[in-house]
Length: 173
Image 1 (spheres, one colour):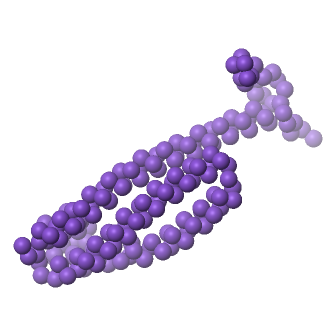
Image 2 (cartoon, one colour; image 1 turned 135 degrees about the horizontal axis):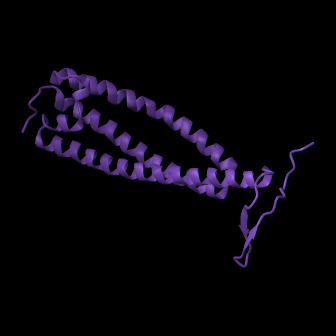
Image 3 (tube, rainbow, N blue to C red; image 1 turned 180 degrees about the vertical axis):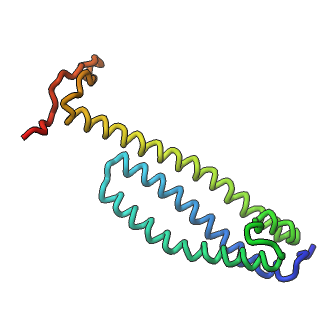
């Protein structure tokens, strides 16, 4: 079956290349989240710095793909006589021939699956960082806050030891 709109089929190869780059980018993002969690747990400052630099470089490179996708979306909108906001992969599938429809549907399914996994991994990373911030704050308060009475710690034998009114660091001069 041929496309119901002339000119659309010719642009699909370019769209598939853009979608392949999107898939590659999401997979790389998943790897970076894993690496970030690992580096945070290991407290590897140098590694975190390298990861941040790598993310900056890749985001600049990926912005080219984003602008290409947006310009293609505008072209498809013009071809389909629709507003740009209405152009989705599902709408595009509805005007493609059988083979092209299957290719676009496959890429869409892969992207949907990867995005669900990315959301889950992002939430896990956010929870880890939130816990780290909470632990660091509690530790800092227990060290420097002179009003911190009743803070408890546990010894190697599992017995709770209540901290008295003493602090580790005196902030008075």
